[in-house]
Image 1 (spheres, rainbow, N blue to C red):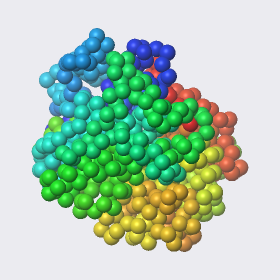
Image 2: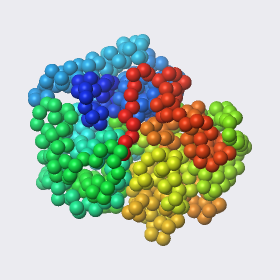
Image 3: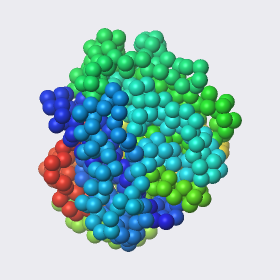
Image 4: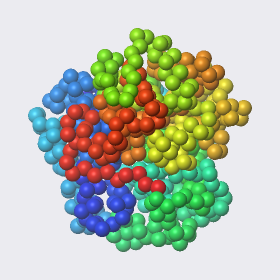
Length: 620
């Protein structure tokens, strides 16, 4: 069966902007349906998957993923008429009860309804009618399917936690074979995910975009200072769930949409909100630490109870909360479960895969454990080399073998050159895993500071991730033998070994932790060869790995976009396949610096970006 899955709710953010003009733009972010993406699954196997933001340049866009769909179909040589099922990662029913207002009814009709989704499909994917081929999949079921079926487990506990699905914020389920049975849910009115996003707003960041900044800030703080205040906001229940009574501070319809009632309460309890652009203080770090602590406590409470109830010793995680790699590391260290699988695209983009897998569960249950999610647009070495050209102010070098390439790039890294690395097919999900990466020498704090300030232009407290070969993982990081595979997708935090911290200053966080990527040779032979060469040259077979994008920009997709971004950045070198481009002046743009918005006008599939798209830039 050929199933095309997609995520996102076209027009959700725009509808909210039009309905509530004059708000702080960050409050408009409290809307459903970000991270639109498309995935093509054939007989239970993911053939292609990509997020729409990579084609339009608009981060976290919820627009109907027409560009991502076109890519997926082209990758398999199919057209819309060849698709058996079109599956969507939402299944909204008619609004009812206290939220059945005119506003909610209009939003349902224009954004959420099956009719609105079919209208978009008919508009952008003309051909055979979609009505008989369309399947709406409940949001948390799509999340659950996205993690259970690729896990390779015959049975497992499944926990989904996010801001909200249609009406729930947490789902506990059991997966067995091709079936997923829901055991327990927590409604959206008690969402730990929404609380995390509201505190993200309180700390001056952008909700549903910058939660990872709060996670990065937390290790600088003391969780005890504000812990009692957060403990009053999240209360654990004997049935293994929790309530979030502070969310009841939203009393009016307006407050339910903007959360201004809760934000007022947060200001009263935690102190004045930080404004975007203001310096972060110790108070802010302490708030972030306490928020992280209560999130960890509530999720461990759920997991312990579910483990005891089901007796299952394997765990699958998905939903936006599953991208909290500090929490994931704590779960791993708790030894509650013998094995853990976290779906790499755990946010809503992953429900494109999950919806497709759920639509053909019988085949999906036989697919086995997934490897690296290199499911996006791909380019041969010849195509990558052709895109390099002869840029002014740069030297272009070509290499015949991977070994020669690795020796040259390892030399550049050892000399302190920050290098972009573009190979093969793009990763699916928020992490660059060695095909759309910026790489650097991991050994000094000075490299971390330079990369944060000069290249990525982001907050100084943000950490970077190390990538290490599987045979070296336990020597440099506290990773138990036999657990290396769970670190393949950069979704778990562990500790850098005490004796290695001074030698890994760029990738070890203030609390001694590191968000490690463990690399197997068969997963990415060329990247593996580079790390090996760097180890031979420096004695440290570890490389700093972060996503290839600049402030406010999605991860790059194509070699043309890679070259444009490189030339206007302060990156020192760019690797396209086996072609190496080095700037004559280290750390200087080779061309005048353009803005991210200007660069985004050229969509990465060579077409003009859609008109009327706006992006909320990173703040803080």
